[in-house]
Length: 547
Image (tube, rainbow, N blue to C red; front, side, top):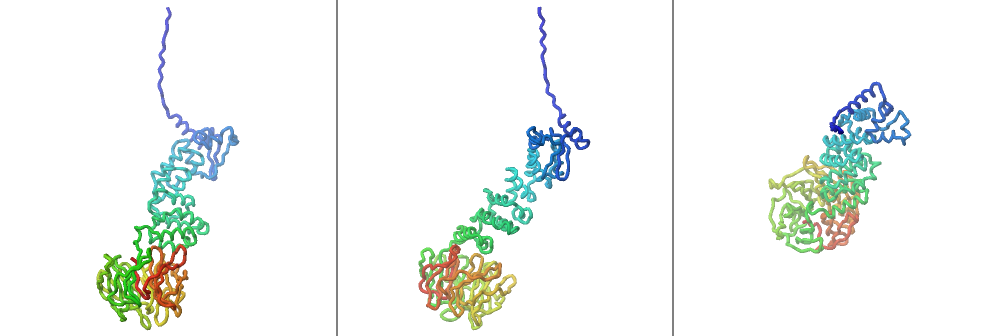
């Protein structure tokens, strides 16, 4: 009989933290006695004793360095460039203890060190720290480093934070120090918010921080702006006041094209002129720019010339003063556009009778200035629609009539005219101070000129100074200077002018060849005037309104 004994084996799993304990003990000894350390890591400002096997286990960088195929496996000293002793100490502590202290002051240096030494765990902790602590202080550097080290989530979160705080960030030095590729990446974000005006400010600020070295990057950055998101008013100011734009043909052409074809919801859909009266007619006509056809809609109540006209609320034309049946008047009439019956209503008369004067609207207040006389008039007044009353305001420094007046940048400007002699002088009125101040004079004396605002500047067109003028001048309020512009094809005195959809139109007037019916249009893309049809009968000192 055989006896067989069966032994049943049992197994149990046990766990211990002895690996961490070993590393902790090795860490203490490496910093005290350097026991069993076989390599010294040297930074620019410190030395660290360590164990090759431990470093190799945590870092692909060290693993390759100490491999049998590497010459440096035989070396007991390894120099690491670009990592400070403070950062190396933090990384060493992590390798031996799995603990690291990250702060807003050290996170980017730790991230750079972990990338260089190829320690993915530290890189992940840096990424988590940035995501959890993203704010306006960190976001610019976070964006730069995250792009450099391919931290996709951090890139996206930092982009959001940058756009949320863009205006604040523009004032910070680290924004001005962004690299070209980082700034370009911001401009190319597909889902960025509608903040292109702020981005334009960011662009010019960044370029001008180091103009000599960065100016050639302007076009590359500018083409990434979405011009459709820029308001018409912003474009209008931008294109003529920024030298960086005007010196770049591609940029200026793109901007001007946007001005000529602005979004429908940003400006009124103007396509017609209303012409009222003049020295040879009392007709009110509408001229359609698209068809270049005119039609008479009514006659004024009396023969009227040398008046001034403005539009109110987009549905009423206001004709003021001038000569009515040959006599200077203070009459103010309103003509309703809707429906186009041009029904006439009377408004309170001006405080003075005026002819060959000028008028414009600023902040819903009507302003008038000057009048014709031997020495011209310095008198000015305003009409407040809320009180329905006219009142006097500060006087011009020089009496004048046959001049022009426009509203620009919350101020009023007058230029040229006649005041005992033909004038080249110009003045600026600030409603907050009620004072007119002299500004630089035009290059030529001009009476009977047209004055318009175009692309953020004041444009003087034609006139008379003993000769009929075809020259034009452009005043830049930022530089306080007048420069000659493209000349008209035809010299004109007593013409009328208006701006519609990014182009200037000049109509009628007279010169030494007689009364004029021709119309000229200025195309800023071509930078030249071209003849643009005719309007019968001829118009001299007529009033023009765009509708």
